[in-house]
Amino acid sequence: MSRSCRNQATKGKTRPRVLHLIHTLDRGGAEQLLASWFNWVQDSDFQYEVCCLFSGGVHEDSIRKANVPVHIAGLKSPYDLIGLGRAARIIARRRPDIVHTHLRYSDLVGPPLSLLTGCRRVLTTIHNTAPHYFEPGIALSRFEAATYKSISKLFPRYYTAISQAVAEDIKLHLGNNSPIWVVYNAVDCERLRATVDRDRSRVRQELSLAEDTPVYICVGRLEYQKGQHKLLEAFDLVLRRQPQAVLLLVGEGSARPALEQQTAQLSRKENVRFLGKRSDVPALLNAADVFVSAAIYEGFGIALAEAMALGVPVISPRVGGIPEFIENNVTGVLTQPGDWEALAQQMLELHNDEPRRRRLAKAACRYIETNFHISRMVEAYEEIYRHILQE
Image (cartoon, rainbow, N blue to C red; front, side, top):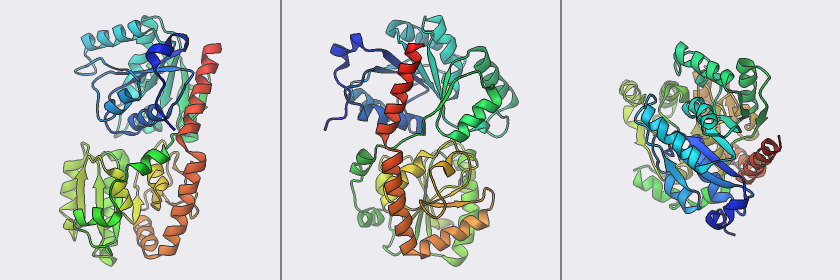
């Protein structure tokens, strides 16, 4: 069955137009969400378009192939007024019925640009918990957090949250005046599995890993939020009892130099592999024994959900929206946040118990397929669009 959008050029005139406003289409949870969405949708009641504020990215081609137009405003920086003017002209020219914003900067500039160009229906999806939007700390300065909250209150709009934990943060920091729907992130399970282009043995050979080598994997941006610095502490404890174990870190980010420096201090630094950005993440997951997250905070954890959909057992701290789709010892393993010794212990115990790994992986795969399939997410968002258009 074809899952691409029908020809929007010929049938789009009678359908409401939804313009998704986002920073880029590079690798990331929100960007992956859009790519999965548009590659799944068939015969939608809505006509979709995307406006990237800064640049395109790795998902741009697949979205265009799904007959979804992609417009690039080409901002050089967040303070690029000329670039913001281009974004405003794109919105005005496309005349969307709804502007749907994703990620912090788009959430800030999207509502004023939309109002300026005549679109009064704005839906914002919040993709992370409070430390990434509302609370000053490692991710945000006090000024940035205050600015986000002020602009959000100055320009009311509809909200969706990717987990109940995120919805509670929105209510806490913005009050109960704005409508909030919870729409969980989702996985295009069939498409994900179809991208596994090499079997486990071949991938391990390519990485010079023996078949019996214990392999742990973490996929995510190399940033403070994702907690790879704490995962390295836990892995150092693992190596004391499992010296042949290997940790694969997949992703890039500003924390990489510090993480490499930390790795150099480990007892067996060669057992940590920095693989950078990869286009073959599903195949890498398929070659690993256990997926490990050490996130400090997390709105949902799409990388965890994808690992579960591929049948890889997962371990994660009990943070943000993660306990909403991982049940401890049923679909995965949850540890207490900040207890990195416990994380190391669970890594060892899970790897050494193959029947348990298989049981958790099978249950997780079935659970994601049933409850977090991409079709459920698309249906939920389109129902919200209908509600907004009727008001």
